[in-house]
Length: 107
Image (cartoon, rainbow, N blue to C red; front, side):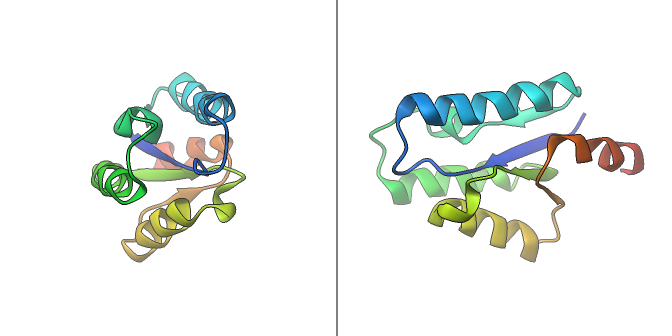
């Protein structure tokens, strides 16, 4: 089982839209038998200041094996930082859940 971090836009979206976007990704990852690391659950506080939320998310990201980048991640400063960090640390980054199949068979 791999730990997969979900990176995506939060700031500027409604609670409902964020919950739906990250929830759909989480369910898809878990259906493949992996552990999804949902930043909404990591922070668990909609009023948390952005910088503190990012510190929590980066700490969680560092415990993961790979990243799933949601479609809206390029519209998010936080997700962009997470993806840049993951890339620099040579963590696999996926843009579709289906691509995890190859990753888990090899790794």
